[in-house]
Image (tube, rainbow, N blue to C red):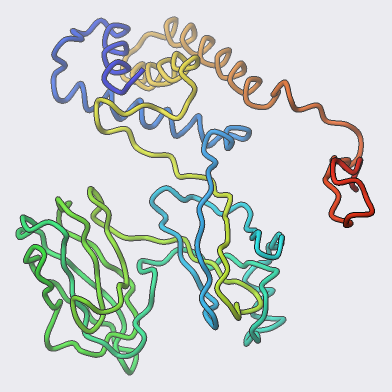
Length: 327
């Protein structure tokens, strides 16, 4: 079911007219459905519904990298197939304590570095420019906050001029760090922030429909000495349903669980304890079935011990098919 169908079904449950929902009612139903989806999908065992993969390429002598947080809640694993290497996780405290100034080499560890609002830092003290891919983006105001040479905090803003790059402030030419980049309203095009000029190095990008940029940042250890493509298994953030054609991440067979959860939120506003108990029982029963569906996959048959069939990499004198248990 898409978002519109879910709102209409919730309306019929609540005895409301489902054909033309009053704006306030439609907004309330939308909030209830989105909040319910977030509550369900963040529960233990539901992460499989939010998993995907992303790739990025390392750059020689560059230690820190950024992934867009729009759609990325957490990086779970990092690996690369050039050297068939799985990178182990380490906390930031380990990196700073063990090797705060690492040498270059082939990375075998990764370290999460939190969220940041640009994917690339200015290479030196720079003036910053903003532009859009849509000529009609001429009413939105772009804002930046950051540090200038000497450690001073500065704020600048400017109205977009479509595809023509415009400086955030001609009087601030020494930004060394950008801490915030955002718009007053969404743009029709992709809005980008650059250093030195409109064709300079891109620092951040706002996708169509976004008003703020955020990135999930990580370090590779040791610092890469060459360009290698890395793959990240990530847990996606839970997207808000906004368009009528949007669909929840929950499997369609369990959309009734989402409706039950949304109706429970509606029942908070009414004094109907008997219906609350009835809907709550239905919700808890459906949630148990969803958990079982997610956790008990028919192809997953756990056994005692860490036994995984693998493939031989021992050369021509050994079988090339499955090599049996690998511990």
